[in-house]
Amino acid sequence: MNNHIARPPHNAGMMLETPFHPRISAANSVQSWYDWKGYISPERFEQVDFEYFAIRNTTAVFDLCPMTKYLIEGPDAEAFLNRLFTRDVRKIREGRVGYGIWCDDAGQVQDDGTLFHVSKGRYRLCSQERCLDWLHWSALDFDVSITEETASVAALAVQGPTSCATLRAMGLAGIETLKPFELRHYPFQGGELMVSRTGFTGDLGYEVWTSTELALALWDALFAAGEPYLIRPIGTTALNIARIEAGFIMAGIDFVPAEQTIRHGRSRSPLELGLDWLVDFEKGQFTGRRALLEERARGSRYRFVRLDVDGNKPAVNSFIFGAGQREVVGTVTSAVWCPTAKCNVAMASLDMPHGQPGEELWAEIYSMRELKWTRSMARARVLEKPVFEPARRRQTPAPMF
Figure 1 (cartoon, rainbow, N blue to C red):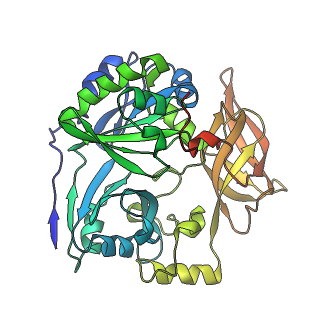
Figure 2: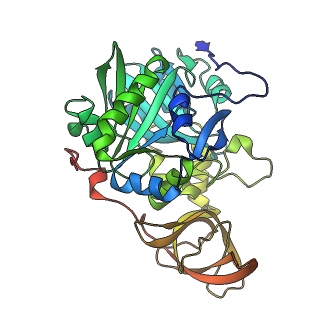
């Protein structure tokens, strides 16, 4: 087993800059920043409304560089990943991308992420959390090489109805035929772009990957091509609205990665996060399988749900009460007013057996009105599916708006 560690350079007391930072800093008129895994990243560039509606109406561009990235390759790469992931990695064919999760021995979710099957025996794993030590421990006795490539790969999420038209105008011929969760390689200024039809917005969209040396050239070419399509850079605030509207969960917000929990019982299993569709008990052994089989037999502690909340005040950090409004049955993990779906959406972890589709609950919401905090109880209904699922997200060929 050969495990290589290539960490980004770090200066004490300073945050790291992504390869796109010169363009991002120049475009950020309000200089609103946050710390994303040690990198300085934009919360917003100007008004969040403009950025959100770029996602839903034109082309929005988000810098993905701080996302943790690992190159996993070698004769046992597939076998190793199939032991690590709860889903059957063998079904993620070459040239495809798969969403997946991995657990500890107790069946608790360590993290979720996307796995890119770049070529035979060669994969790229992208995740929110850093998990290099866990990958090393899991790779014992497998002939694989694991290289952290966070600092050497530049990536942009290109999302929205005109994203396909923008990429085609940039010269990516045939991009409209790329199916959801497929990837393709294109030559670019002496190097290469890897383009995947993936994203975190629930809309038509792509992610574009290249070397850091070509990052600024990629940015310039993309924005020149996208100008007629009203292209706009976006920060994490707008992206967060879109991902909640689409019903996507996020590590560190909607669940605590098992490796980071301090208090017993604060982590969640995939069955408790509504991710049971990612667990394949028939594929053979994987980390956490025995614990998950036991949980399936005895029942789970929690159920993760999406809620449609009355009113227009987001139920941020709210307690969820049962029908009688006397018993707390859960807590909200994410909440937002969804501008496109025109509804007040929350995601919550509920105590079993609560959370059946259609069940009516109550959200305790605190909001400030003219310097006075007001408490209100808003009716909340359990949803069966996300509130925003446009046909264009999966349509192939992709529409050319």
